[in-house]
Amino acid sequence: MTARWRRTLAAAIIVALAVGCAPADDEPVGLQVVATTPVLGDIAAEVVGDDGTVATLIPRGADPHDYQASPSQAASVRRADLVIAIGLGLEEGLERVLDAAAADGVPVLELAPHLDPIAGDPHIWLDPVRIAEGVHLIGTELARQDPDGDWPARAEAYAAELRSVHAEVADLLAAIPPHRRRLVSDHDSLRYLAERYDLEVAGTIVPGTSPLAAPAPRHLAALAALIREEGIPAVFLDEAASGTVAEALRREVGTDLAVVRLHIGSLGPADAPAGTYAGLLRENARRIADALGG
Image (tube, rainbow, N blue to C red; front, side):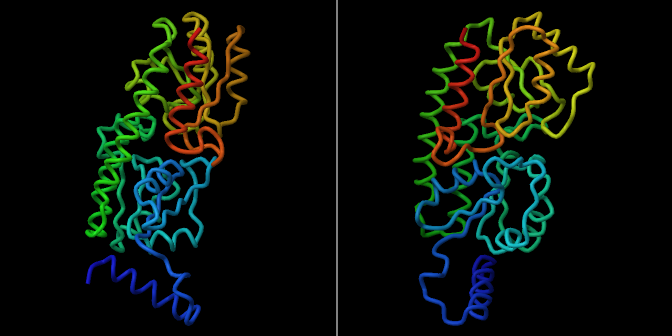
């Protein structure tokens, strides 16, 4: 008996003891997949479709760096057929839950370490070419759990869609003039995007890849001087980030500096342009091109 079927049998026994003879419609159908972030949840749902259930641990708009799982979410991770995470320290608050599930035999796929990551930077989803490769890894892992499904073909269909989105984003960002292709962000989160689309990260408001850090006054003053000297027109903030430090930077710069919000750590509302992963990529590119196009 495989680890998956042992977990499925155990879950069925628990359900039977708790609710007696529940209707068959109440039982989970197909593979049970848990994704850590809304971006991963949307990606997984595109591959899983109606042949399984995808649950997302971190709500839309929440910071993935410090989110803590509830007891019911921790239980869902232990029952999952597959758990998908970014890795590289992004989901700091979930590491104990993910490690415990892996120790219990739950397959936990951390995508970023397999996708030629930039050292120490987990924001790999901002590069759709790398994520298209990651979608194939998801398809392969789903096929291990359910060999009868057409998971690799589904993965390739969605990967092809992401490659098409990449071409759209490349066209949008290619229009930015050479002297304006420099990015300043609230934390170090745009290196994958910059590397893929021939942009340059000029600086960050807070050091490191987590928005939870705080800048030293000397760092902020040096960044303001760089912005003035280089004529950088905009600073980019995660939608979930506080604008307080960015406003302090704008005052320090002493000239017009646009503060532009991007969807970095999470998707937007479901009915918004950035409500899906593909939509997030397009909307971020549009906002960057509008801010830097000049």
